Image (cartoon, rainbow, N blue to C red; front, side, top):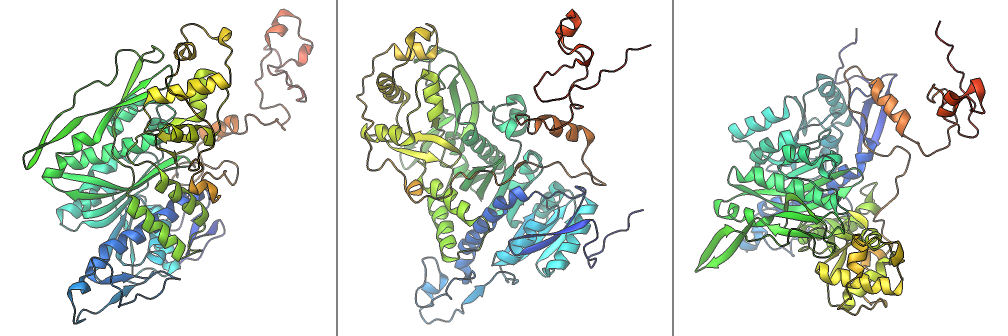
Length: 585
């Protein structure tokens, strides 16, 4: 019988110590409590964002956030919004908040699905300006481990482990009128069951941090499931990763609208195998009326991949106020104007900016002031720098390989296509969500004209194209624009010039989602078999052939197999024949 864990217990023989940031936790073996080292970037980013959010929230209260490496605040240089600006006699005392200290009047933070408690402990040790952190989980085993980790790191004054259903805890905080200033949702899979409670339990102007790892659903593999979870139909297009971000933002805003609340995105990131959004939640009946005009349907051509957006509502000025109504449309006909193929209809999605540029600049500036604070600092700088370069008012993107594969032509380089768009008078940027993405305000007509010009410089074998193919129909039209692919001075973005780590390769094999934690530990046999069958499927087999299918090939049944009685289904070179099973008696 397993002995119950106590807060003061040292690491056991089957347990390991894991260090991330300034925290060191006890991690049990056997997958009893979920921990994924891949999410280190996620946790680093959250600490950086929460720090700047605390700076925004606490500055009006006269509380100055101080990070290691930063200079002490200069009382002679007060920032805008500091209440001491209205205190010319200097009667208001300056208070500073440092990581690891309990800050009176600071932020109350909830990690609703804490597992080992690593994220909450890192908040306590690395984020200044916190009054309390509640680390919640529904698993008794996880909560027992959290108590040990909190005691092991000496953060019991800040972090309080709780065992409760996350939704019940958030609903109760609303009923008790004790909202949280920041709520972190990082579930295994979809956060959909927790969103309704979260948008109610966060304080006015509070921060919601939400992770979605069900990318198969959000990226178009299961549009019907996506509609059930998030109220939007996902599409399997080249822009699927940005569309996933916009779907979760739409779902958050839609649920907040039910309570006369609305969201303001601070930062939205697609990384590795998940998406992560940081939004503030406000209350205001008048502002909620704008929400319909912030959502849009997506018309996506299945032939050439062209997409158009249709806003759900419209807002017009009416005297001293505004008039709200339904939008008119659709923006396309029954078939695509370029290739005559049909359209798929997806969404609704969030059609407003994904990020607050000023806030992202603050996070970047804080990274510069405190170098070495995070293990993934180089990647943080690279991703956030690309985010600051993105066009805010251009939803979704095109890809270089998507455009060229449609026309069956050579792929232009990133600088060549960006130069052509800039020479034509359009704006263009990268996207952090895809390495070869191009975001531009050029209409599809102009974009295909540029690609027609490129196809003339890099001829396509027209005889191999069928008359009804998208390539044949697009190339049959002469371009109106005259494209110039000469290098434009602004073609190379700043993040690319500086060589920032924007799209790093996976540091090791099997870098991705891990198995769900299981009571008693271990991984289900079905998952083990699936991993053995699918991982490294393109690598040369090094086993003895016993993993191959044990039944003969078609030639054996015809009596013409060269392997005779040693026949097996797979005839790969270098793999010994597996023994055939004896004939049944």
